[in-house]
Image (cartoon, rainbow, N blue to C red; front, side, top):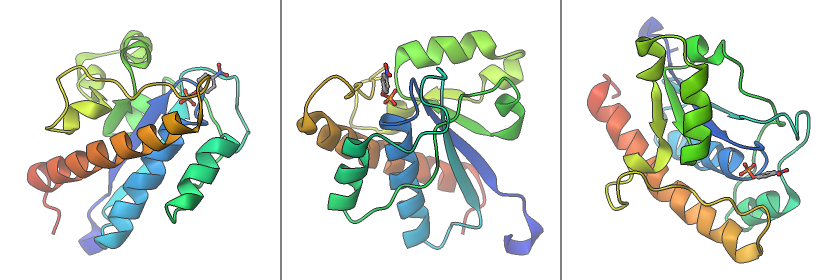
Length: 166
Ligand code: 4NP
């Protein structure tokens, strides 16, 4: 860890943890890597539901990532109440995920860690969502990737501004 400073801990959350949040995590990790910030910020992802615990991301998610030169780490896991203490930023992909997480938060301090991921993209309307691609076609996965890329860049800018990230 740089100069013994604890890393900023970020968790991306969707419903199943096999499409949107692993994409957000992968895009964000790629940005961190490109800016030599991988020691300063750590990222994880989770789902509000337990349907896909232990599974690798959806094959369409993996194929889209591969097409863009990324690999996606991790296996599906369900978000736990204790994650509110383990992470500094909890990024919900849509308003439904956000309201599930809001109900899980046990204090104002925990609620303050919760954000809609796209709210970090200055080009998107406040309250915008990352649309669920699970029941749609390949285009939806490409779209999720583009949306996550813009929001991840905004999130990183925010972290640079709010924390001493040099
Ligand atoms: P995700 O997409 O929340 O972006 O991972 C989904 C994955 C699985 C299901 C729904 C959405 N499902 O109903 O199994």
